[in-house]
Length: 335
Image (cartoon, rainbow, N blue to C red; front, side, top):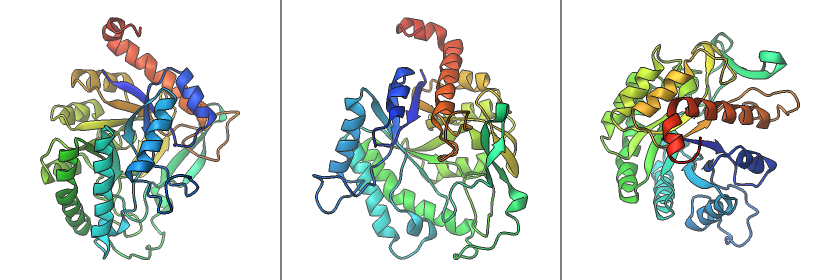
């Protein structure tokens, strides 16, 4: 049965208690990149064993299970094929080995060099005056190239294959699943930078590059629904291969060129049909509500991640899950 999780930074905050009060047990966590952690020695390495021990213990001491790590060591040189990439990949291998030692089962990563997640607005009016994030590619067409100039898709596929050749065997040995997040937005190129994880076909190619049970997908619905008109079918396609390792449950309205992120009950996707698809493929990993509008009474200092919107999303997901998994929930006493 699918498990509802939430992303919490490793620094204790009131959101931890609110999420726990909503009945969430699983956590999507982050390495701790703070440099003020006493007792870890002078060379604090967020991906090091001692640092991960403290992160995991902090979540567990609060009653959570750390199910996914969704932060990354530096990877720009690895993505761009620059000198120093082997050292960056060595760091990833160290992270994966340490996750395996600590029984943290999933690492979520991405292959978006230079630009990362892009939005052109974080103040788009939404339902009831909430503030949503959005993207309008027309505003980016005239944007200058980055300092890296033109970065081809061919280069990124080559560097990704090189990365997987090194990391997948380590993940297999460590019993850790590698979950690739799609490009956000799923468009290519932007400012001269190609973005290769931007179609359903590109994820098929990813899986073919390294046909391993450790190589899989972070199925971010907000991006995949911009790639396809049949998101439940895509869930079943990858789920039948047992390659869905992690889910971001969110929604949008519009197209990849021009979209706005929505409340979870107000977008273009049939969320109930998606939940049924996860049930049908036997997915028993975690999903977390991702990217929410900023609601009245909350701060827009962290667009897409305001607290009140996330609590609303947790409740909505719990309702969907109960509608789809009602008999299974009753069996485990959670109905």
